[in-house]
Each structure stands twice: as C-alpha cells, then as structure tokens.
Figure 1 (tube, rainbow, N blue to C red):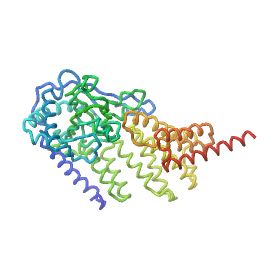
Figure 2 (cartoon, helix red, strand yellow; figure 1 turned 135 degrees about the horizontal axis):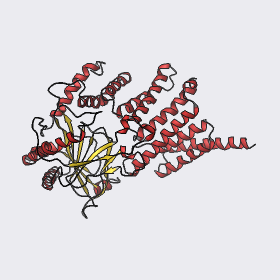
Figure 3 (cartoon, one colour; figure 1 turned 30 degrees about the horizontal axis):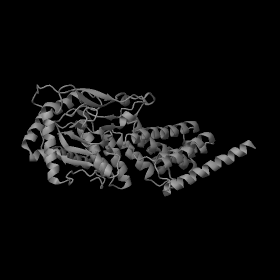
Figure 4 (cartoon, rainbow, N blue to C red; figure 1 turned 60 degrees about the horizontal axis):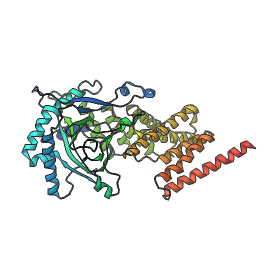
Length: 483
C-alpha cells in the first residue's frame, strides 16, 4: 500500500500489524478491571541537565528514565535465581547456538526470549505473570501516567517482547572488542524495562566490571554519569523506547539482564488520538519508508512525523534523505527547497533531542553543503548573514565533536568521522578568510586520524592531502599580507 501511495489505507493495515505485535507474547496482559493492593517498588528519576540555549517546552521535561530503589525490588532474589537457572539450562541445551530472533548481535552476547524460557518452565511463567501484574504494569502507570505531552495508554499494557541477555566480557575481548556491548539504538514498543540479574564489582568481589545502560540524553551538559545501572540485582531502570541508549561494554566477568519491551492493546473504544498507536504507526512506517522510491519515502516519513511529532528520529531520517540522497548538481528551485527543508529537519531533530551527535554532525555538513550549493547556483542572497551562518555551522560541528567524544569514551560511539568534521570546519572558516581559526581546525584533522590509527587508509590520505593544500594556501596568503 505504501508503494502504491495509498498511505491512509496503509495506516489501517499498520494498526492491525501493531495489534498482532501486542498479541505475540503469551505473557500476562494488564488487567485494568482489577485493583491491585500490593505495594509497588519505589523509584526516582534519572534526569538530564537542562540546556538554556535551547530552552523549549519539550526540553524542559528532562526526566530520562526511572530507577527503582528501596527494599522492594521488581524481582526478588528467588525470582532472579529461578530466571537465571532457566537461562543456564537453555544455553547448555543449545550449546552456544544463538536462538534470538533479533538480528543485531555482537560477539560475547547470548540471548534468549523470555517467552521461550516460560514455555519450557510453567513455574517461571506463573511467577513472571504475577510480577507483571503486581509490579511492572502498576509501576509504569504510576511513573508515566502524569505525562501531559505523551499520556499513558488507554488500552491494557502488555509485553511486546522480552529477552534475557548475557554479556560475556572474555568472549567479546577474544573477538577483539573492548567488551560485551550493544550499539546505540531505540527499542520497539513504548516502554523498556531493564532488570539487573547479578552484581557489579562495586557490590560483590565476584561481580562484573563495566556494563550498564548508556543514555545518550545524559551526555548534554557537564555531567559524566551517562552510564546507569540498576541499584542492585532485581531492581530496574525503565524508560520510553524513544530514548536512544546502548549497552555499555562489560569489560570483565558476566553480566545478566532481562529486558521487557511493553506496548498496549487497542482500547475497547478506539481513540483517534491514542498515543500508543501513533507511536506504533511511526515506528513501523520508518523501516517501510526505506524500501520506497525517494518521492514516496519522503511522503512516508512526513506521515510518520505527523503521527509522532515528539520523535527526534523521524526528522533526523527525513533530513538525511532530503540533503544526502538528492542530486547536488541539480540547480532547480525544487532541489534548493529540499536542501533547505533538510536543514530545518535536522534543526527540529536537535530541538527534540539535543544529545544526538549524528544530528548535529549532519546539520553542520548540510549547512556547509547548502553554502557551497548556493555559491554554485547564485543563491547566496537567500542564505543567512555570513556571521550567523558561520556561528550555526561551527556550533553544530563543535557540538557533534564534543558529544561524540563522550560517546566514544563510554564505548558507545556513533561512528562519526571527527576528522571530517574538523576538515569541514577548517574549509568553511577558510572561505571566510579566518586563517587563524582555519589553521586550528585543520591541525586537528591529522591528530584525529592518527588517534584512531587510520593514517594509511585511502580516505585518510585524501583528507590529509586536502589539509596540506589548505595550509599551503593559508601560508601563501599570510605571506602576501606581510608584503
């Protein structure tokens, strides 16, 4: 239907698809008619620092995730032991063969779906169902029910999927990795529940080192606590699936966790503005868009954005396709408008998520490309004033560099080419005849390339040749000025 351009009909099919996803798990569904009297775990919010320079209504909400605290845990010690024993049995039976249905697999990680464990152990299923009904579902309602921008689901909360993950540091290091980890990503569903199942070295001499959940949003500001772990085995960290995060490298020992992805059933009375279904629509439209022709792809992404206007990933994806997939040699007004819309899309993504180094990086690159395109097509009069344009590009790329350095230090890099960012900065300010600043940026290029050991790569050699030519140009012009 998306390929045919029938997007309205496609939405109906996607809603049914999402409903099928909510039926996939055999674990207990929230019983909204039953009032639970059992206490739920206490929790506190993990919060990101504010950003005064981009102070908007959206950014004022700085709650990133909740972490449970206190004596009452989501999983009590007996629950943890039961679950880990079931996982141990499964891994022994499969002799190391991967049974996870997820395609994103890293060396050192072993995964098994909770539904598979529960199918083989009825006692485990009974215990998990009780934990969901008495602790997990009420806890999510209590924590996220007062969010005015993204209200809680009207339908019953349920499990979209759940997976037991074992991070083995030694196996990962044997494969040449820093540790056992997961890359930066967003989850499916609407809420993610991450439950610790064993102890860190800080709490036990037999514990693992490293590990934890790296939250991209926590890299904004001066703080360095962007890796978070539940306070003890059985405790949990819960966040919305739209929060980009990663599994920080476990550097020694074995770390076990259970991750539960929650969604919700359609309410008995369908609500047009039901947040759950708008989020689900956007989540499912995005991968579909990548399979379409460019024109339909852009329309599909715009429809996804309309359904979930709070998602930073959608304007980011739209910006990538508008700026990078089109023909930069096309001088038409239509292509110029696409480039400008792409810049605006990256800016919107940054407003929604100021911590995404990729968005800042691609905004900086898009501003540079827009400047060059305007020069070639005689549209310089349509650009912002030179000083404003320079400040925007410099801020975008310097912010990208700062954020990516934090991600890389945590072992959760976006894969941004920092050397290229410095080269673009040097090239741009050189065009503005700011020789001193250009030299500072250009000198960083070689340092970055040497730092990652890529000096002999073809792209690195090409970049270093460009740097040499620019530095020669600066030297020649400074010599002329002195004469």
